[in-house]
Length: 288
Image (cartoon, rainbow, N blue to C red; front, side, top):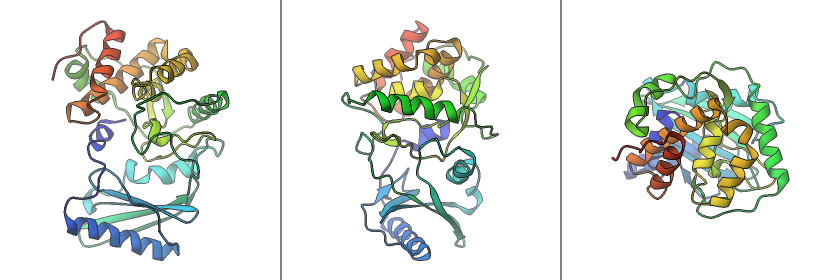
């Protein structure tokens, strides 16, 4: 999760202003008409009402909007680039169509993907609040998917050294660490983006280069309120997390989550994340 993603976890609700809500609903309906699908499922809103998704038969239709000057770029294009560059052996919904248009001040992108019939293990939230029982085959599928994803060449940069340089002292109480080993990863690996067996990885807008251990450190942090599941993650991926490179990636994930917590996101996880960071560094996390 980049700093942008940390900020974007703050508010996943419909726009407070009626005009904004109506605007997004009209845009979604227009996209459905263009794709010749009928959206009938519940509305699922993204950060500050920037995105809106709904089921449409055997598809999922999601639209994003932004000021024209801010449209495009890595997050805007993530789903489409993942569809063409990430091997199909990494399980994810298939992209069926993309539609772009603009109004005088706003740009829109609509993405029609296959609908994941198996739902995530949480009700739309990234964190577990209790342990879940997943079969050994699920863990093998996750290990295989992340291993395949790691081999994908890309110049997309999901986590940057300059975030580490600016923020490790502030949120972790330690000096900056140089990211020496990177890999290609999902960059938003949490329980709202992972389905129960069979495994499907959702939400590909931020995939790209990140520190080794970042994805797994993020997933482990989101599991800290479910200790048996957290322990399973560390056991299955000890070959990554128990290395110097994996520690750097995990600390980066923890630091970015602590930044999100400082803005009111996942307050119940804040002390657990801080405690995990202190286990890795032996240094108290700065108090807000």
